[in-house]
Length: 248
Image (cartoon, rainbow, N blue to C red; front, side, top):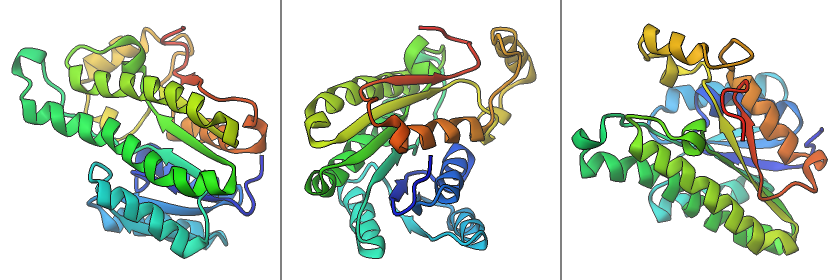
């Protein structure tokens, strides 16, 4: 599943799942643009890790929820590497609380970053992909978007929206050689899950048939598969990487 000669843009690529995706795509031969919003130090560290293994990478700051900045991410990718073949919409935030306590601001922030950001980045990437008659768009959804999660109405709605967005866009652009798929991670060991209460984590673990939480690399492998030639005939699908916690 080599990606030699390909160029990938990974949003939210400075840490966690995004970092693992960027590192693996680079390892498979892709040139990688690592988008970050706030933490340049961590983004630069990913670039250094890629370059240390002989790969090519670039860190680019940008808020994916802002149209001009999403467009700039794609423009800078093409300026640096001449093309864009793979877009991984991974950027996401959480602002968890019960629905009755959730502010409109917290709702908007999560939906704007997780769902609108995917829309804006995909829209920006589509024009060059259409011109080259091919491409891969991979949206990182969530188990919360498939089954819902109490205290995460905003996050669950955004991630469920990504699934519908994936299927609709796949129908629109399939004839032009562009595949669009989603990956729905379950409980993955990242900064986002590390802050959860131990009691909550144990309850979640009891629902996972494989009896362990996933690692960022588990998601990265799924992305690399869909981005490669091995995923040529897969589009409009949701690949659940959750240890069997939800089976659909």
